[in-house]
Amino acid sequence: MNREQGRIEYGGHAIEFAVVRRKRTTLEIAVEPDATVVVAAPLGTPFEDIAEKVRKRASWVQQQQHFFLQFVPRTPPRRYVPGETHLYLGRQYRLKVVSGDRPGVKLLRGFMLVASSSPKQTDVTRDLVNAWYRARAHKWFADRLEANLRRFPNPERVRPKGLIIRHLRQRWGSMSSGHRMVLNQRLIQAPVYAIDYVITHELCHVAEPSHRPAFFRLLDRVLPDWQSRKRRLEEIMS
Image (cartoon, rainbow, N blue to C red; front, top):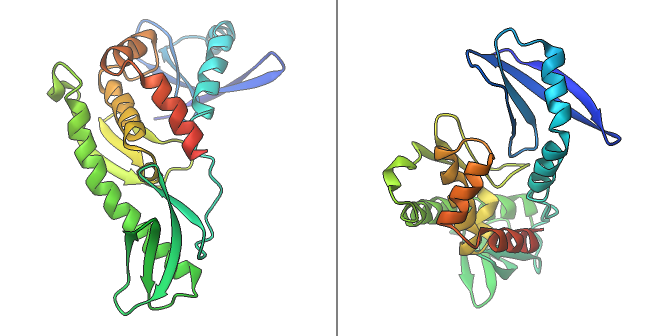
């Protein structure tokens, strides 16, 4: 789908936006989880009218962008050296690397114990830890998805068509237009209540694709304490 690109100035800052033209009667502005701005406009709408609409909504757009930018993962890259701390489900574990013929990772009395055939090679340690995180993420996220679906009056109406786990740079999760949920693998490091917040947030997008007032009304109903969960997620994972 071809998109036109636009830009306006507001309050000394530039707001860039993409325009998607569709067979519709109204113009809608949406701020995506990665803070990009997308305008769905009726066919034939003059570009100047679209830019003027974005200018009129610029304050709201910037508020939404600020909301999402606070939600971006900011933890600096790990070096995977002994003694370094790593998170799992909100708890800190100190990394310990030992020589072993059967590579693997396990948690033992506050340590993340990595058995490796090359204990001095940090890239090998990194790969082992990431593989372990990914395996745990697949199990936990699938379980928590089922648990959080029960928050909704009709769970099957918001059930995603798939669950995808990836390394994401700009967000903790998203819901595709085809209703496939994508979760950041790093989320396995967060407490369960924070994982539940992200999953529930994305489930709400099945019913309400954009962050209009109706979306937040739904989120308030199914997860009344979502704002405190979000703040704690940001504090712990920053």
